Length: 224
Image 1 (cartoon, rainbow, N blue to C red):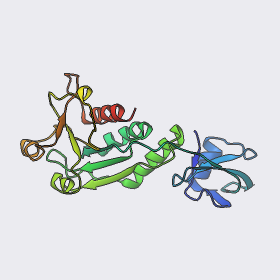
Image 2 (tube, rainbow, N blue to C red; image 1 turned 180 degrees about the vertical axis):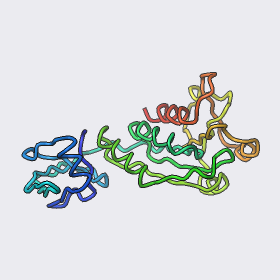
Image 3 (tube, one colour; image 1 turned 45 degrees about the vertical axis):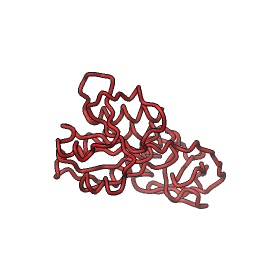
Image 4 (cartoon, rainbow, N blue to C red; image 1 turned 120 degrees about the vertical axis):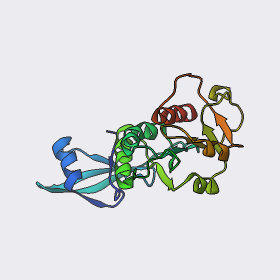
């Protein structure tokens, strides 16, 4: 674990209690005599604290040092993912976060099941846990649209990841910022017609990828 997330990091005193207290001192068994390192994921600073008081349920920590870290600005590429099973999304999020994806946009399309709903607080916790492990210092952003039409009213600099003879590895020049990936089943014919005029991109592999595999593949190609 590279650091501990606490939204109040930077204050002179922070209190550790509840789940975070248990995780630090009972699960990780941190030595209360050693400094603890925190980030708030709102700025780029690394905050060093020492435990000034600890009991069985909470601990008070005092700020002793602030280290300013300079982080390379993330690439602007974003992925729009047709809504699929939240369980699949949750398993995929850590990979996308480690790769440095700036924003993940969810779009309900024809083959999306309307009963799929996202708990964005849960998604945020997954991303925070990933940041603590991989060292990323900013939070991935989320956005959601009720339909493809609603999405296209806001975004137009789009590449559509679909079956196409236009392969990713052959692309050159300035690439679109938003990469739209379908859910399981891809896009229906009406959606394909609506997306005519946008760049369409396929993979070199002849295998049919799951949407989660396609999302990770695109992020890897764009961000690494």
